Amino acid sequence: MQNESNSTTHNQDEIAKLEADIREAIAHGGDVKETVRQLTLKAMHAKSLDPESLGRIAAAVMQGAHDGAQQKLQLASEQTHTAQAQISNAVSGLDTAFAQFAEASKLALEEAAGKAQQFSREELTKTRADLEALEDLFLDVVKRTASAAEGVIADTLNDLLAHAIRNGTAIGAQLQDTLATFSHQIGSVGHAQFEAGLQLTQATADLLHKIATGVLTGISEQTSKSGSQK
Image 1: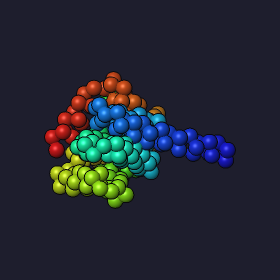
Image 2 (image 1 turned 45 degrees about the vertical axis):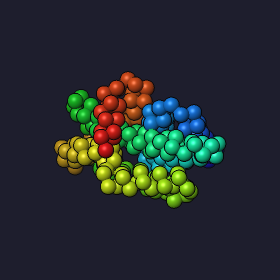
Image 3 (image 1 turned 120 degrees about the vertical axis):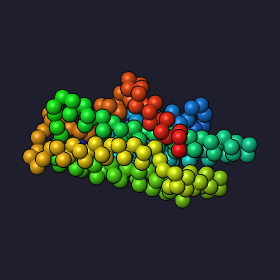
Image 4 (image 1 turned 180 degrees about the vertical axis):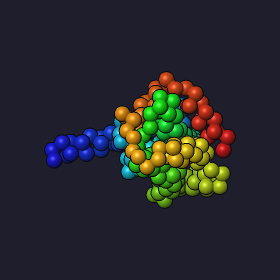
């Protein structure tokens, strides 16, 4: 029980730090989209990759972005345009990070297949179901943040949400390819469960770490481009 309590406290501290880091990124400006993307990916690597954890990460990112933009608006009215741009960049950075999470899951499958390894049918099926809900999770967090916000920040978030629903997200674009790969892999596994010697979540987390640290630059460039074309 003590270990469980310590783990919960540690996770809460990590989420609080992520929120604070995002808030600081908004306050100091710079390349907000890239900073949010990197911070989100690092948080994903540090935590389990279940929907509940991803939801907490996304909520912390959006709360930090909201608070940072709110601080700018309180400092001076001429900061309105800057605050709008940075909240937009924060949402885009979160979208890109989630898209890269989806692509990392696909790459983990492809790498295992290349080594004649397979993950269990049970894990593949569960992960595919989690991925299918990823875009809705992202949109729901943006919607909840907009509902809790006021004034120009609420208007900006609602505009971004409407645009995402109308034109799609980087997450949705990536999921088409990722889910097709999962469906193919599940079909090839059959009913017998075969352990690959590693877990899909761990393999995905390892790839996310490589993306966040710039070791895998191709995936970063590809998903960033898909996001900017929306």
